[in-house]
Image (cartoon, rainbow, N blue to C red; front, side, top):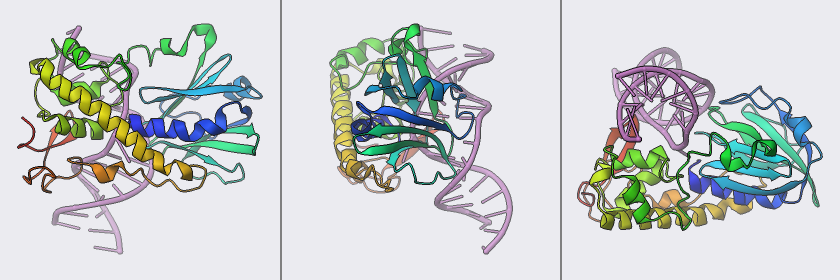
Length: 277
DNA sequence: AAGCCTACCTGTTGGC
DNA sequence: TGCCAACAGGTAGGCT
């Protein structure tokens, strides 16, 4: 579920319930996920007004006057809006119960593998962008800061394969394992190409592919948004648009040659050897 | 500085 | 049917 588009779709889904709402209750059902939950979270948040939501890379942000709640979905996390009476299930670890004009609503974090995180950043420690987990992240791919020139400039001494450089997230954020394969296919770049050997013209294609594919995925994931308050949890529609991801052995949608799979840094990469050089 | 590897977890799948 | 290994959307932190 959670690469940048899925996190953004999640944010769009919960924002209407959260903006201007007041925290009614905070429920922690275990002591933490990847890191311990802040144990004083209920005290910190109870009766506080939620100012708005945000996102930095794959980190979901919920803004308060006195600080910011940081949520990461890890590999298997998702957030849904449920009725507070809805019984918690095995992997429901964290609830933010808010009072809205439509009564109480619960924003519930579910995460079977528990690689996710819930953290608190107090404004006494500065803006949330200065948080140790956020301050070294690359640029946002859907802003003007991101460009072919930025990719080109930042990769001049990077000998690693472009797929792994994209995944590293220190140059551009939000491109996870699925979208890295998809974007490189769209750009016609072989995933093993050393990042520093790619020229500006090819980075123009890659930057364009990243912008277009992430934006399209958000739009298509957005079509499940209306189900967010239900118990649904259907995946977004973007997976129907995959050109290479999870298509090993199937014909390329462009040239009909067989899609191949390889391993890079213990992660699967999918590509078309004809379309990507 | 860059890059490789391990670790954190549970659930699902595919081979035998 | 059962068992076991391999694998799954992320990424910090430790080591070369």
